[in-house]
Image (cartoon, rainbow, N blue to C red; front, side, top):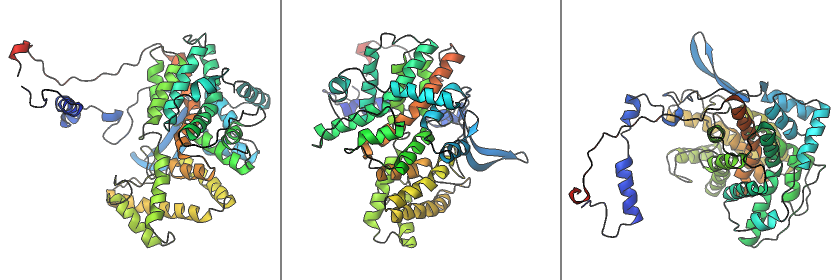
Length: 453
């Protein structure tokens, strides 16, 4: 009798049996040249497809050698710095314009942008009683699951749900892009009321406001916000819209779309990917880490004391004892994350408006110390820099967004990229994505039940 099981097996004993018989010798991955996590030995992603949507540059070949370089991010061939500078200097928000670019492959002219903004605004409605009957039912702190449930339920209101023709999928994507802010914020209000005892208020979006402006309008009791708050939130949405196509949730979108499934199922799958803490939850960890730092360092202007705390983080002696300084480092970027660099100056402005200059100074101090400490402690020679999540959580906290909304805000931005990738997959291939897994289990002879030990 297998001693892993008792007469009445427990879930724990069954889990241990599963672990015992499912574990694969890690040396086999190298022996068979299997790219674990679809990454090569240097951490570079395995090329699984082609895309026009975005590009990341973090390394260049100089004199025949591959070397790290300052990070660059391109949306449809346009440098993210140039895009942001364009709409900021011309005094408009960028979410709608950048959404047009990612979906249709070109920047809109004034008439196209105005018409597209009206199209998004006109799609910013939910079915009758949807908020009451779906969003407010079974409220939970896990707003990402609420988002997924709402998206899947919207499918039942769509008479053309399974039609994957390009015009219909585009219609569905534009509708989902438009209503995501409402689904996210209303889910929070339901949770805050039913689970936390807070006041309930449901504000309708305004047709005359930007996506960022509407998020702040429907989130806040008084519906008020400053122009700088709208600008910084808009910028956060633009910077989180898309990232190279190889990220987990965008790849998920390609994989699920290739099966021929409907848009609601594809977006729900992408939400499930983004919900994972290895993908979408880093900015929450950054904010929590800084709270812990303040609780354990009495003078946060003391460079040496802050450095000692960071060393404790790396030695697994502080915060969550995972050995990480959250918000520092990235799977692709090394010398710099262009999104963090674009964001930083606006974060500084918002911190000044909010009277949180001291907090911003602490973030800058940690950023300057952490890079060298991680490189020395981990023997990383390619460079370590702050990523966009290092500052985005701080921005959300200054905007008064509850932590439960941080990842849903990421989703509210990234659904634009998911939609672009879904459309690209449908346009360019009719092949289902089917990767190969190499079997390493030897063949065995069947034993009758009475002969098994």
